[in-house]
Image (cartoon, rainbow, N blue to C red; front, top):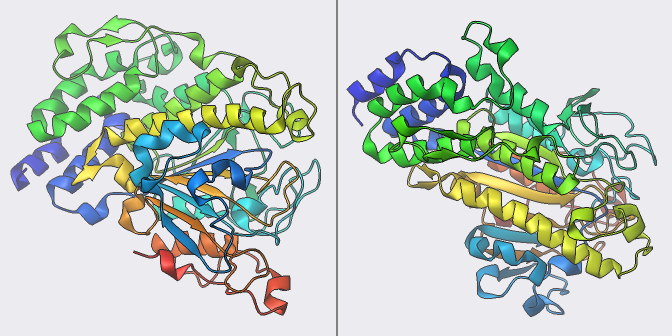
Length: 461
């Protein structure tokens, strides 16, 4: 695309679709100018409750071999993943598992509250406590601004609450001292808040816009203009962009005039966005997050996936997460956890697949995205903070040597052991914040000469 074509993009006069198409056009313009380094970094933080048991995400090939006193760093692509993670097998080249990082400077128990992302001790059994700094997800959002700078989506509220729907404050993410990030717990409301603005230029549209209306109906004229302005090489990205909206399942509509640019049929409206079934609401929130990323509406999403009050009935589970953590169900805790982990892996894989399908630069959107799956209670239902596992999907813009690797750091207290503060320091350093150390240092490790309090240098590309 030459300068004239870029100038044409800038001069496009858009109507109803301006809000949703402008971020997309900006990315097309950046690539046309050869500014590959201007492609944004994107982050999705998926927070689950009740702990991630380290053994549950360790490949069988590495069990018993990753307990040495030095960093265990192996090729993940050459070994089978644990069975509950099989949905992620197609993404092993962009998958990483990181274990052994401690978080003893945070609160243990059912939830560390803001501690898991803010690296400090706060809260009690039912109270999130004080917010003393912006959490790491919010810091990354500041480095990668977008129309919706930091999107928070939730299925449930605080750790032990039955909060459900509407605006919620689950106590896990904050944009600054004393400023907790609000999360939207209702997918239908989130849809209108994110995408309803696309019709704001139509007379009375804001009042008449309902979930049953097809968003693409309001965007057809603008889509035609954009399709004419961009080269054929960009049509694949446009298709993926539009498919993201179609998959929000607003209502059945055949867009016969757009057959070459978009799929012929928008799926029928379903109860996905109003369902009271938790697993369905999870799918809806992931759909919303993915569409928002593809549209360029946001570059950072934090999803509160569940809490200890949640029960996965659709998966055939008869106990809530709290009961599972206390071995109160009719099946073993391990069996329950494997069923839930298989479901979570499928959600991650679906998002990764949609991002991988969107061309971007010399690759695709997944190359420039990092999906981080973590727990708010470290290694178990009553988290100890001794080990805080992370599962990461995506290339992260090639700034860290993570894709395709399995890493386990030395155990807590051993020489070479590292912390979640070091982890978040590494991410912030890699993506534009040269902070010396993020969060509170582990004073016990420091007293015993085991604390490095700095980035994980071995991870920098």
